Image 1 (tube, helix red, strand yellow):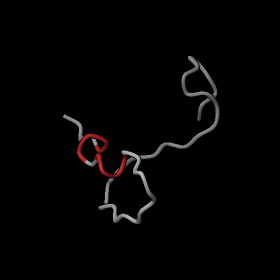
Image 2 (tube, one colour):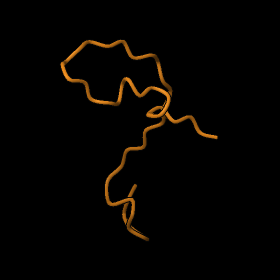
Image 3 (tube, one colour):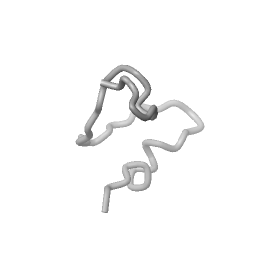
Length: 46
């Protein structure tokens, strides 16, 4: 079962009434970069 950061760390994702400085714990993630529309079938996404 995947870990849901928004569910587990609601205090970081829910807006506050006033601005505040928070310390966010280290989190692992994967990012994919490319050009083109990734939703286009047989598209030029690379």
